[in-house]
Image (cartoon, rainbow, N blue to C red):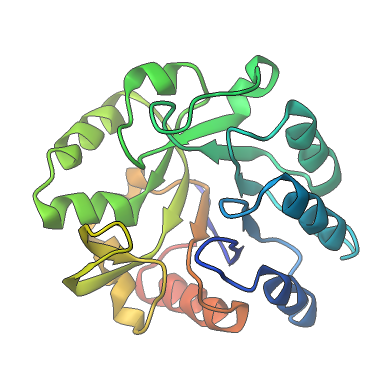
Length: 228
């Protein structure tokens, strides 16, 4: 199965997503992922309008939100060729709208409490491998729970972030290894420890690093980790 590593325009952690879109244009990138995690409805509309000014782009995979309307999903698919979306588990972010029409194109991410009941409603799993590695390093029971789900349900997209050598205290006061800012290329070496079947056709880099930096990370992953 072919695997494509996608640089990403991210919107959480006060990242400069407008600058990232400008970088996408500057470097002539026509395929990338989009994380709408940090944008409200008004900001998303601005984001879509800005993206629509870029010629010949495709956004095959998008991290969506459960407050997005069905019309938003359909607009993104029509205008940017989006094939797959992911959302968070419903116990953390309950559905507001009926997504039955596009359920097969929506994946549920292993963020928070992922259950088979969530996955069965949609098209499969978005495996954030950095979350999984964080569970493993932290000794969390979620590691084994997610691994069991991976035996039964398909992985159709990935998120990849950095893993630090030592835990740090996150904004929610939890000790974590996964980080959305990469400071050394070796912080993605943990990916070598996971089997090929955990990697999907779309592997989205989920980092606050700018696009120029993400291009170097992508190249490193392709050459060193034999991905993409």
